[in-house]
Length: 600
Ligand code: ADP
Image (cartoon, rainbow, N blue to C red; front, side, top):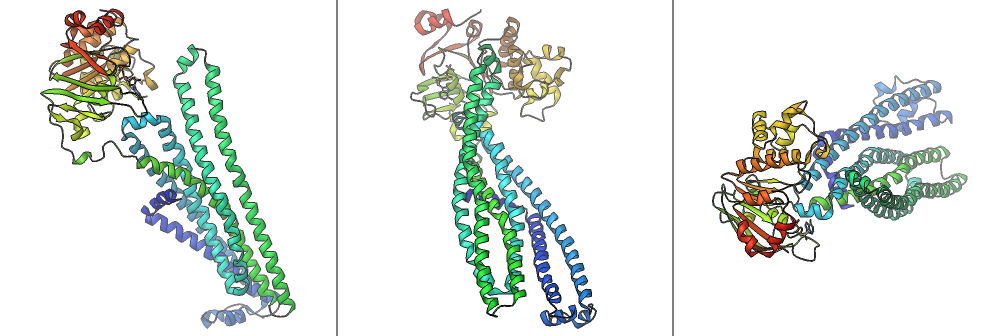
């Protein structure tokens, strides 16, 4: 439950609103207590014990000033009417306070959960890439959105209904004590009997909800995979498989959710049955006392009435406690996520990396992905001069992407160092490093926004002239300007409204806009027509001048245009040199040049 209270404590940050909500709850409950007490004169008139309201007030509330007492109706019926008027007024007042309490607490919880969502998403985005990839992005999406919604239900149950019912119960209880404390004391004995099953079922619910949330995470992932890869699903006629995988995940969600339903359904009736049993025992004891003349009948009726009101108010609390218990599972999952260290932890204390102007060096670098059984890179040593254009070549899976990901510190090597101008990248601020490194990947992430915003992507303030200039230098301006709305054309989610070559040139424009000193490019392996290829090569050649350019090459033309070629195999650098040198000396390269480097 600890995590739930941790998030609930955030409500305290909005002291004024929380205070107002709680005050309204107290006022509303006070109305109920006072209403119960007001029933006492009513009963006494009806039983003809007291002849007027004035007399009753003088006997029971001597602190009321005589000036007021004298103006009260002197006949019994007038007194009854007066009590009813007071009751009605209190009911209207209590209902208004109740409304304000519900409204204030609901809006407060909604606001607090929006803050939690913001924090969790911000934290997720700032986690190390390996953590997010390793656990799967669906898990983070699911926690940010679903778990926070579940948390909201718990907070609403706590601050809204639970507080309202508990304060009402307490007020009715206070009225019962005022009527006769002994009867109330006997009733209290039943309380632990009620608390016990609530605790037991609460635990079950918590565990069940935990399982359900985890199953929903899987469901989201499976649905995402199939719909995002719908092209592949349809091409392979794998709709059946996609549906079966979805059904399996969906069935698991169902199973987990049904586990909770039993505990949720049984606790309220159980508490009710225990309460009725306790009242029956109480009635028997009281009956004995009344027959023996030791207890006034009207006192008993009033006490029982007040206790029934207390019980009635507390009854929904059983269900509400269940809801709060259910919210502790998402709270734990959210707290677990935010407890993972961010990649920029301690970043502020690190110095900025000076502008790159000398060289990049990989020094005995070894790296293994989380959960992998072999190293993706082993003892890689490599020196690259500033301004050099280097092509990386090697069979699929030999570690090219991994090696170049270490430079902007997307991953941190387990052994060895990556140095820029002799400075260890791990010892400098991430921001100062990443602003100097532009990365263009094959699967450039395009968002559903205008072309201009896709080029800006994070540099929201960049003026449109700068965006146009970057597009021109990326050789993308031509096709963009031919689109119906030019730079304001909306790009479909994932960039599916553009061709592969166009997507890549937008990605290049995005990198150019940042004016990086080091450009890392993963050349597209497919989907690029000859014209795009030509344009992309020109863009890299022109923009790369005076910058360090590292290209994962898939085409002979790129390799031939490089100053140097680095050949990798099985996580090692096996050779470096020019095309001619490598063709002559390096078997791996000769084979790749023959089979993989397509085109000219
Ligand atoms: P290349 O770019 O040369 O094709 P990569 O650098 O992508 O090669 O991959 C190197 C090795 O690391 C491969 O064996 C690949 O399976 C593995 N690998 C890549 N990414 C991950 C990851 N996120 N988790 C685990 N293993 C990975």
